[in-house]
Image 1: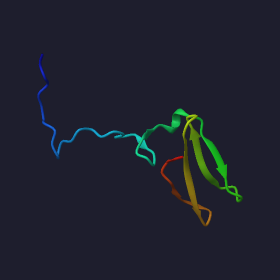
Image 2 (image 1 turned 60 degrees about the horizontal axis):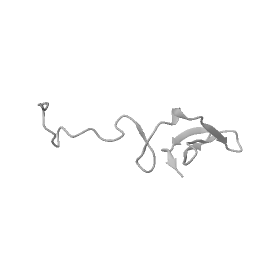
Image 3 (image 1 turned 180 degrees about the vertical axis):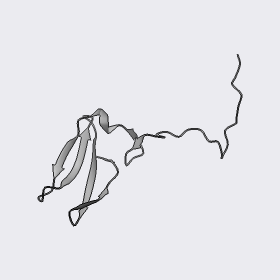
Length: 80
């Protein structure tokens, strides 16, 4: 049996982290919202309030913040 040789794992060359390049939810779990139908809720003034999806067990929600009719913040995905 042979083992690959190369640069050893170190502080400057760490192992890849879980979720690198992926979306993480509020618990640190990797999620892929595009795999699920997304649902929209609206504020009374017609602006988009939330985007949410479910896998049948958990629900993830992203909340939008509006200031003077301008979208100013989109939250991270929060699992509930």
